[in-house]
Structures are given as C-alpha cells and as structure tokens.
Figure (cartoon, rainbow, N blue to C red):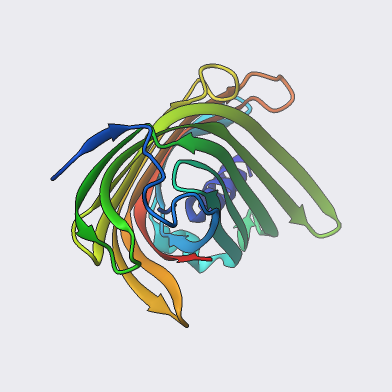
Length: 267
C-alpha cells in the first residue's frame, strides 16, 4: 500500500514556462512602446518525466517514471503563465494543476487512488542590462539582448487519497521555497528569439535545495491579429524536500525534466 501511494503521488507530479550595437545599463524608454504596460498570457504543456528518490514513513524507493505512465492516468491538467511588464519592470505568476486516478490490486482487494498536484510560482524581475541589436522585430520593437534578475516564491502541494470500499486514507505534503535567479533574452532576427531562465532556491526554508532551468526557441507571428510567440523548449526542476514529522515522514528528492510546447500572446 505504501508503494502504491508513493507511485500515485509521483505520477501526478510528473505531469506537473515559458517565456551588435550600443550597450546600456537600466534601458532608457527610447522605444515608443517600452513605457506601456502589457499583459502576456502563455498556456503551455510540460511533458515531464521523473527521476530520483522518494519515501513515506521511512521507506524509500527509486523513482523512474516516464511521462507516458502519467498520461495513462490523467484526469485533468492545466498549466499557464501570466506576466505584466513595461519592458523594464515585470511580474509573473505561473500555475500547474494535475489530477490523476487509477485502480490497483493488493492482496485480492481493489484499491482506488486519486492524486492532486499543484505548483504555483510568483516572481518579479528587473531588466538590469540591455544591448540593442540592429533592426526591429516583427512586432515593431527594437531587437535586443537582455538580462533580467528575478526573485520569487515557489509553492508545491501534493495530496493522495487511497480508498478500498467504504474506507479511505488521505496524505498531504506541501512546501514553500524562496528563489533567486536570472532570465536571458536574445532576438536572433525579426522572427526568432531565444529565452532562458535559471534559478536556485529552498535554502532550508522549504526544500533543502531546489533548482530550475528552462530554455525556449520562439517564433513571432500574429494569431487573430494578436502578437503571438510560438515556443518549444526544455525544462528541468529539481526539488530536495524532507519532512521528519513522525506522522508522515515524507521524502521527495526528485528531478522533473522534459520538453515544453506553448505560446505567448501579448495584449
């Protein structure tokens, strides 16, 4: 039963973003659009596999779960990112929610397992460095290379319900991590760009250590007359969490990694 509960939690998390010439510090509002605030909405899909170690009640197991195993038991998932920016300052909120269900058989008894996983991220950034490049983008903005330090919080919650007939048991685990990092943006030409982000967090406040890295190749176009960037890339998230509470004793030392596809629409 413990192994069944562990497998369900890890499957859900697996399902469980986005975005040469004069150099200047703290860019000036020379581009007409730069002082305006924009909202950027970015739905995406992260096909994550899991590798590492996890445990409950002092029992640990190796984790090796490909994304296809999670997909078999998927009931509902939603992933997306919302960002507001004026080109110098910005804030973003990223959310992932996944629900899975499956049936297992143990000693001749049918067990039902429902698992929910939630990951919420909020952060702010500042465009510390910007280097202008020759030409403009398809959206009429100056091509640039930019570096944006970021700081924020990442909240993770796992809940699993194991039931057999009229009986059920529920277990939960959640943690909150502060993180610091940086975002990088490079306009290859008027259509294509590269976005990358890396951060490190935890520091014992939630996890003992967490690290996130992602990189995307983007293509600018217009979708229903709305400036839109189509994105494809890869993301890695490592979390080392341990709860020594005698009632649960939960351990999660796992890396999620896999391709990401999505789009970003600017309003």
